[in-house]
Image (cartoon, rainbow, N blue to C red; front, top):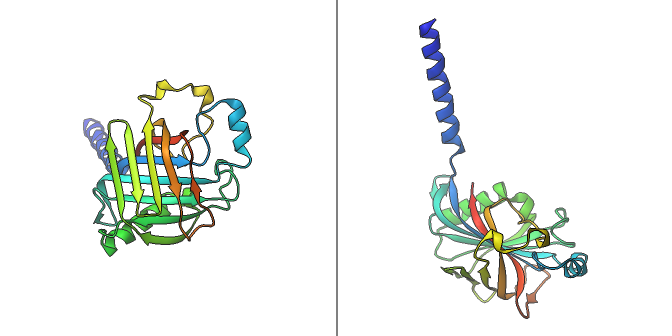
Amino acid sequence: MRNIFVLTILALTFIAGFAFATESPTVQGEYIEARSASVYVGACHFGAEYVEGGREATAVWNIQSGSWNDVSLENLTVVAVISGKSNLAIDTKTRKSVLYMDPSTTPEQRAALSDMLTTKYADVLGGVVATQTASIEFTKEGTRYDVTVGEVLKLSANRYPCAGCTQPHQVWYKPLTTIQNAIVGKSEVYRYKDTHLPVTWQQSGTENNVFVGAFSI
């Protein structure tokens, strides 16, 4: 009986250790998402934007550590610009996207990034119509984030100091994907222009249209 008990404990320990190993994140880092609608706003403003707005988004994965398909992705940033025919909060069927990767990435890294995103974020991206190399700059200073993709995209945003700094009942949207410690942010500059998607925009003024958090996959 004692031997059976010991074997049972060893088996459970092995299973628990295996489960922990398989659940450990492969890639992790910071995530920024900007929408073409205010995510934190009064009810009237939300209602006015909901039908005609919110059809575009930018998703930024700033990878701090990890690898995919045995290819290191540490310190890389990949950007996706997403467009749909209706508000992305409800439209998961017509989404199209373009992926942007820095020219300094190797062909193996670009292949790994593409596979990771299309495997883990297929619902977010919809159909990927193009993958393009463009100079990507990602900087963070305190609560401020700046993302530049060549001449195509510019995003400058400040996140709120904490999640409790916003009124929960006035945060109308959720990030397009699950992230940890999501905090709303306010963009000061947000513009996009490229030929791969039938949309361009240049935001005037500031908007509470950003989510910032951590991702792990």
